[in-house]
View 1 (tube, rainbow, N blue to C red):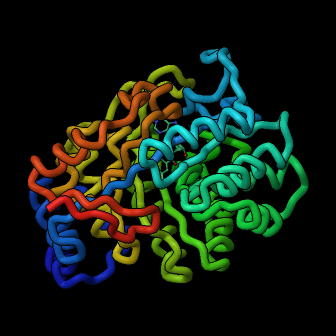
View 2: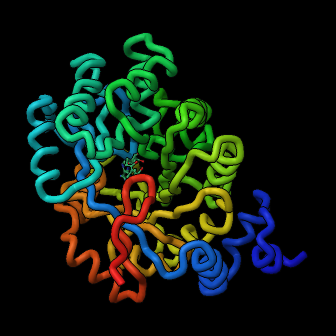
View 3: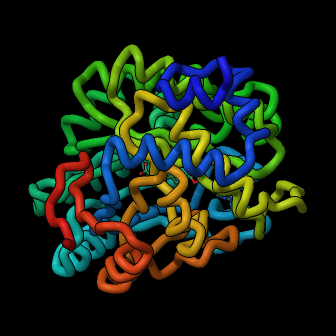
Length: 354
Ligand code: V47
């Protein structure tokens, strides 16, 4: 059967077929992906009011793509105290934030309680705030550093108030590329195992893919298929988030930046390949707000949130350090022909901006 017919009849695609999608022209891909998006969500585009907190940049691991962790290129080390983290949460809560998205570097200096205490204290003070925290890479780091099993770390997260897990640390699952990018960090299989264990606890998470560096299109499709296979087993992923690689201030020598066309194709193909992960997030921080708005017509139904402050990708060149003003965000979504929908962290609708 013709590939386009296969997509239109909603049949699942293989690795080879996924790769072949890239050979289609951008507008054909856009139409195919948009049809699926509209079938599921119509013209709704989701976002949340959230705050990103990155409590330390001291990291025991070295990822070539990372400009955030303290290193030769970024000598300004910092680690926040629980009081500082609580102050940020208080401030953001006062301004209407509903989610704290907390991602740290792999800090070997302050112990497990430094991680867990922050979640617990936020939850104690603001029980209604959703705590999205601990990438699988951080879970694996606590396991390696402190001899805890994955089960122990995940149970501790639940005891201390973590509601859901963000999708970070997935990078690219292909083992050879991963070895080159971030040797020593959580392996692909471990990343998947940790999310499976989390889902088996009845909890939800997201999944990312870092692309536009040294990987091939085939690696991206392989990444998506590994996620699709796990999602068949657990159903615990809410959103897939292709992160566009930002190239400043790091140790990865990549001069070819993916074109807008390649980025949009990757969103559209993600929507087509990942038939069992409901949401596709065009994370405006790495796509740029302009391309993220266009990505709404190429399969994306979610733009992440207002963020307020962002330290990881902005260190590598993204224009995101000050987040996004809510009114402007809503106006941009609306003016691009979509219906802004404020959601909570698990995609329950809170407000539809008709
Ligand atoms: O895993 C690091 C990425 C991720 C760079 O779950 C870079 O809703 C681009 O996972 N260029 C952390 N990306 C952020 C993350 C995330 C973001 C938004 C929403 C969610 C969610 C999760 O940041 C890391 C890594 O892949 N990253 N350096 C860079 N130079």
